[in-house]
Structures are given as structure tokens and as C-alpha cells.
Image 1 (cartoon, rainbow, N blue to C red):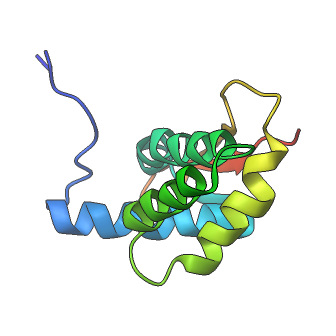
Image 2 (spheres, rainbow, N blue to C red; image 1 turned 180 degrees about the vertical axis):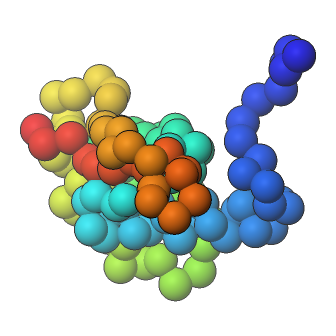
Length: 127
């Protein structure tokens, strides 16, 4: 039974999961859609949507609040993510100002030929 067991482990240790999550979210924001396995797509979906909400809510607020939101996003995505964070706050966040959630969509693609893993396409919803 999986009572009170939350999240996905994906057969990796904590550091590997964190690095993979950061990389996949950066790729999602950069390309606006990525093809991956279904469990990985479900794993990054909530984290990506929280970052988009952070960017969306930092519009039309005080400057110090907006700067703090950008710092939180950089901390979540790791070092070297400043261009991605800039795109997130300047392009992706304002796109969803009238939307209250559900910024990403997961489309199932069927099993992968080599090992039968369920593949999925995760993409940002067009507004």
C-alpha cells in the first residue's frame, strides 16, 4: 500500500532526481514541449506549473517582490538558468495572466519500441 507516499522516485537517488527535474523544466521552458516518459512528465508537471504561477503573479507588483520571485525561480532551477528565468518572467508568465492554472498538457504517445516504456509529450498550453 502507498498510503501517505507522495511523489515519484523514478529509480534514482535524490541528487539525480533534482538534477533531472531542473534540466527537464529548463528544456520545457526553452522549447515549450518535450517528449519523455509518462512518469517523468507527471513528475515535472507540478513543479513547472508552480514556477509559471510564480512568474504570472509577479506581474504588476512592487519591484522588490518581482526581484524576489526571480530569485526563487533561479534557486529552483539552479545555476546557469538566468536566460530561462528571463524568458519565463518576460514571455511565458504574462501569457497566462487570465488563466488560473493548467498551464501544461500531457499527451500520451504510446509505448517506446525498445523497452515498452509509456511515452508522453508535455507541452505548454497555448493561450
